[in-house]
Length: 314
Figure 1 (tube, rainbow, N blue to C red):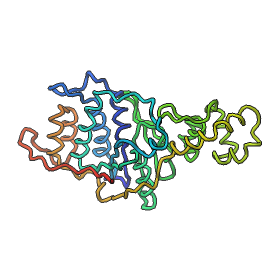
Figure 2 (figure 1 turned 90 degrees about the horizontal axis):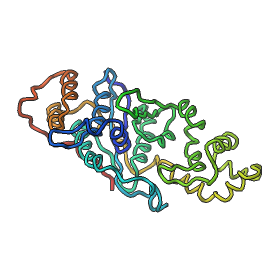
Figure 3 (figure 1 turned 90 degrees about the vertical axis):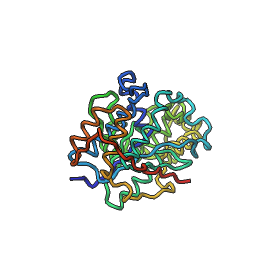
Figure 4 (figure 1 turned 30 degrees about the horizontal axis):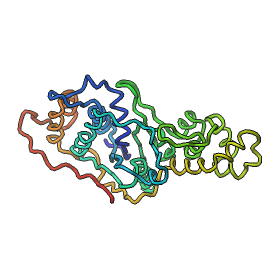
């Protein structure tokens, strides 16, 4: 029986997590095509779709190039290393698998996948549809509320995923989910090259937010903050508010949730098995055949239907 829930996957973040979680040398096709990220990504989806309580809805979002944040701050994510070639080769393969599983890919020009996921999650809430976001990026903790949970898959091939509700976010960062953006505005984020306020670390940020609740509250009460911290905050005010804008996930991006298009399980088993055969996913082929209600002869010719189209909003 399916569970009335929408699972959203942060495409590039999960691909990165799987690429570094599974040994590259252990996953490849007979022709030498690397498949470790593709395999991990695919298994993550299948474990949910074919599980005992599969979600009723499913969607995946990928980044699509430059965003409004790059226009706002040219150095945004400027310290990140280039994507490994072996992973770059797998991104399109991952999309092909997602399409074969008839799961919509949501992409929006000028926005990050985080913004798409944040917008879709907020649109699902008034519909009474709980949201479960799978990502490798803790930035999405800011989306956690009474309707949205965030899952971080294990960093290694085995292990249990970490599930974050409001209490878990507080336990991890000592701030509420709605304070995560202001926390990053203060401490910055080296992975995204978000500057923050020079000299303000996690302990100071937590103390300030516990006393003044928000970034605006801190600066409204700046005269009551004494000594070196006041000077750091005043000197870094411009960077603090820039960092706040960079860290804030957009939840009103111009994209609409179409639940009917996100219905899970509605895929052609033959198409998926053909894809698995191309990728030499023998264990996943076996699992799929064991779990689907109608097994098919994978040795027989397969008519591959056109894959689900990627939804790109210009």
